[in-house]
Image (cartoon, rainbow, N blue to C red; front, side, top):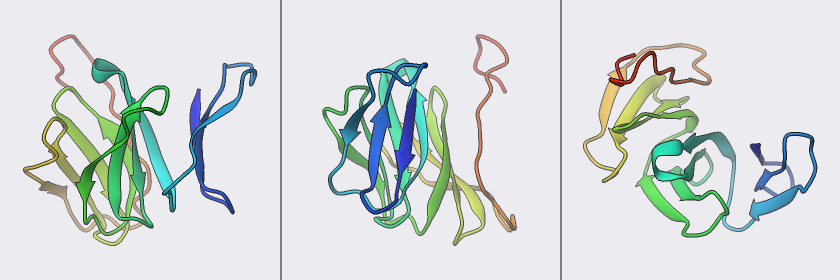
Length: 130
């Protein structure tokens, strides 16, 4: 399992499901790592950092870290589909998306959503239709 912590020493960690073999995989250049999800198709972690105003990714072991989207006001919850990265934004009170391969073509999917927090993607069948 993977999780974020944005206390005194922001980090992204992982462990086995019983809590064993706990290890920090990202500990530098983090502000408020909020949403965290796994892009199974590309075997990578994707997270939102509200303090740094970015959405980033890395391999499941923390290697090959890169910024996918920058200049996002306050990203929080995040979900990945086969084509897009979706996130909630507290400042914009919206759900936004970008192409997950390019980080471009940003679209505001839904606006004026008060008290917006997390989001989840559920794939109902093999076609990717939800």
